[in-house]
Image 1 (cartoon, rainbow, N blue to C red):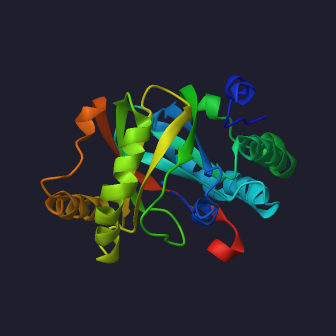
Image 2 (image 1 turned 90 degrees about the vertical axis):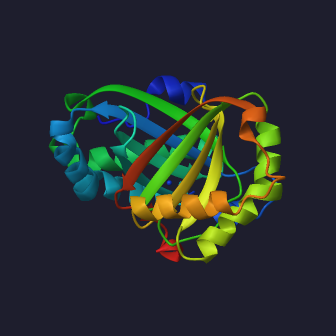
Length: 250
């Protein structure tokens, strides 16, 4: 059986289509899970083909039963060694876990032994659960290209306040100009030490970089300084595969 979220993460228990509606509720923010794998580069075609031909259909079943809001995959373009990343968005962690079980069951039922076992193509795996902050833009599907700027921060609440009260409007201006498709942030709920993750989406990596230049140029002298709350930092660039989403989001 192919499991894209391992049992340890289940027991512990790209913003993305349909999360915006949940954000409008001032209660619990929508949740994101990212299941990351270190995969052999020579087998990337096998993994991408499995997603397009099989796993996407299984994920769609979890969306169709309203457990997941959306799900998809993004691949390393320029980043660290975690080069295959499955993602899903739901209203809360129980829905993320229920949707994973529904997707796994659908995959087994539809494809059985014909399916691809990720452990035959990949060596390591990790999962992370995150809550989504407010975002600029709401395209019908994520991507196609994305940068993630990850930080290790000591005061996530202060970072979120600075994002909502200052930087979000600057990012929205870049989206409104048509350079970025979307920008936002997601925060550690159960994951690694990279507890603040800003993301920027555009049609391609040059678009991401052009938007970044415009975004930084728009900052005034009173702009918040992330280094007041955060220490280490890393960036990654990725490309999205097809997305499973509801008909309302297509």
